[in-house]
Image (tube, rainbow, N blue to C red; front, side, top):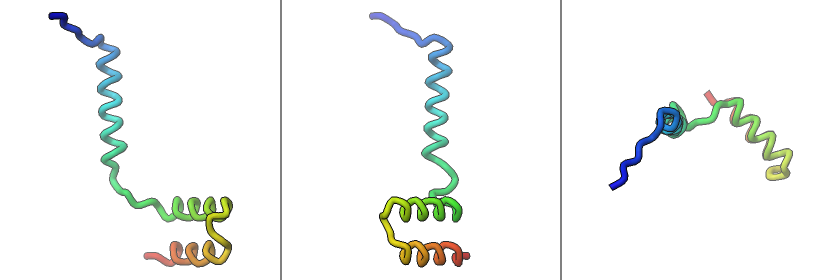
Length: 66
């Protein structure tokens, strides 16, 4: 039987990717910030995914949320 071991740099990389993945998945909140919602909304308008009336209505809803 051949026994393979990881070198120290390889172990560090494996640990780093494992920890990073856990942090990215775990996160503290799945809710985007109000600012991010506005950025995404503007991008949708610029792409033509929504029209100006939909943009204004949704923007008002985002800004008026408490």
